[in-house]
Image (cartoon, rainbow, N blue to C red; front, side, top):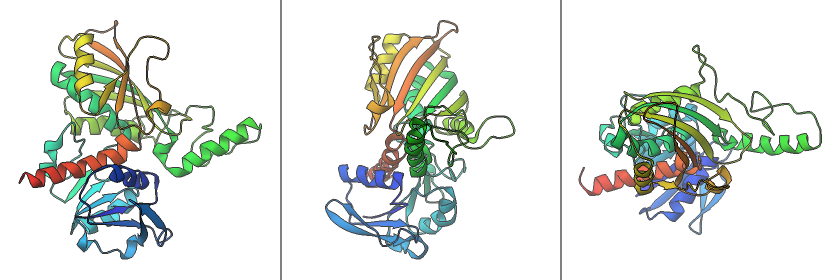
Amino acid sequence: MNIAIVGATGNVGRKILEVLEKKKLNITELYLVASARSAGQKIIFKGKEHEVFNLETFDFSKIKITFFAAGGKISEKYAPVAAKHSIVIDNSSFYRMDPNVPLIVPQVNPEAINNMKKNIIANPNCSTAQLVIVLKPLHDLFKIQRVVVSTYQSVSGGGKSPMDELIEQTKLSLNNEKIKPKNFTKQIAFNAIPQIDVFTDNGYTKEELKMTNETKKILDEKIELTATCVRIPVMVSHSESVNIQFEKPFSLEKVRDVLSKAEGCEVYDLREDGGYITPIEAEGKNETYISRIREDKTNKNSLNLWIVSDNLLRGAALNAVEIAETLITNNSNGK
């Protein structure tokens, strides 16, 4: 099976390569594709040097699965071209709400892959991906009515340039030098910015609306969700403070039990100093960690959680590769 990665030199593209290195997908040929600026670069994969091809002239006719990790504008222009020959797994936001494109988290709604009509499958927003993987087993048991989520998102969610800027700003701040933001609306070093993406007319940012709309599409249209998304000076891993209101009564014992058994989830909730997972501990890990599990004493049938996950893995590269694995499994089963 021939596989291509568009955006192979970027943050997510390189993470997809890392995940593929560890997986046992039967790859015949791997083609790395990027902009003309990156074409000609060499990247090592499984001990073999691979040259980066120019996206503008790349021939997709020999490809079976194409990962897109180069942003919405690139996906808008080139994903339909690739989809004429291969199945596209797109990491951008461009196709997520297209009714003819399934939005997939394999642990949550793998059956939706059967609704694919354009040969394109969308990967959700990184903050949504880690949220729904936790909500799904709870929804199955207790029926979720409403979710209130506040996110604490790392700068890597914006790409390599914001990561570089955090390092640069931190140095400038420690030297008491003037800071002029480039990728952020305000200083990010030693700060928190309650804006990710642009504002819409209703006062929510696009990032916040993505979480609402994508959760409904992936999990259940009836779930009401409201979000506040905040960028914090952390390199990798997104954190979320989540309040969930259920239709049915629950017990903390049952919540811990079902989350401990859920694929992709790991409960670490010790109720002692340090008995929780932080962004730095989640970095490089495949699991979505759940801590600070407790009842909301102010509202009936309500629960509070703390969720942390590596956004470049669970929210992007790992989820994309798991979609590919699901496709291959379905194909081998004749679905």
